[in-house]
Image (tube, rainbow, N blue to C red; front, side):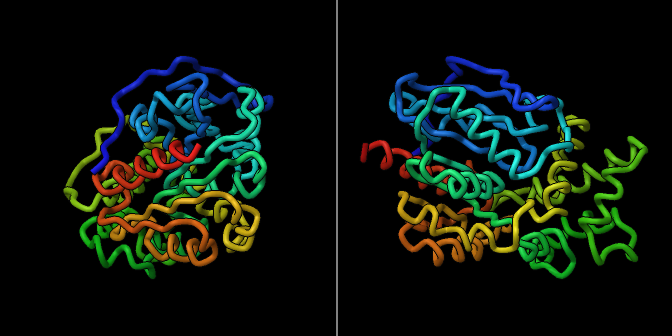
Length: 315
C-alpha cells in the first residue's frame, strides 16, 4: 500500500488579488521545475492543508495549492459576494497565468472534484490530465442524498441525522438546506454559530468508514461558521451549474488522461456519482476502494498516490 509522501513546506507563497474584493492565498511546494499540478480543496470553504501537499512526489512535482475565495488564508475570509463556481474557475486560470505555467495536472476531491471537472472542461487546453476523488457533480439529487430527509444518508447514520434534524423545527424539515441557510444567515451571531456547528457536526463525522458517531468538534466557531455558510451558499445554488452540466460537457476532456478514485462506502458523496461520471467518461480509469469519504483513509491514499506516481512516470 502506498502512503503519503513526507511533510514538506512551501518554497514560495503568493497573495494574488483577483478582483477588487478577493485576494487568493497560493502556495508552491515540491520541485520548482517539476511537473505542474494544481490541488483543489473540498468544502466548499474548507481551505488547503499541509496534508494536501503529500499526495505528490515532491522531487517530481511542482505542487500548487489554492485557498479558494473566502476559504483558508484567502481574504476576505468567509466572503460570499462574487463567490460562484464561475469565479473559482476564473481564479484557477488567473493563478496559472500568474505562475507562468503552460499546462498542469488538475487534482481535486469532494467539492474539489466538481471544481476540477468544471475547470478542465472550461480550459481543456490547459490541463494535462484530471484526477478526482469522492466525486460530487453538483446535482440536486446529491444534495438531497446527504442533506435532506428524503435522502439516503440518514438511514446509514441515524444517530447523527437525529442531531442534525433536531436543530430545525419539524415544520421546516421539508427543505433542510433552506432551513439551515435561514439560520446561517441570521442577524444573530449565536444563531449563526449554533447552526454552523450542527451543519458541520452532521458532515464532518460522517467522513470516514470507521468513526465515532458521538465525536464533538473543537474547531474554531468562526471557522466553522465560514465553512458552513460557504457550503450552504453553494448547495442552495446547486453549485452554480446547470443540472448534469459536468456530465453533458465531458466530451471536452475525454481526450485527457483521467483517474476517478471513489470510496465504496462514501456516504457524503456516494459512489453513484463516480459511476455516472465513469459511464460518461469511459476512457478514465475508475477505482473503487474500500473506504469512506476522507482522502486520508488508507485505501484512498494508496489509490491517489499510485495515480499521481503513474502520471509522473508517463512523462
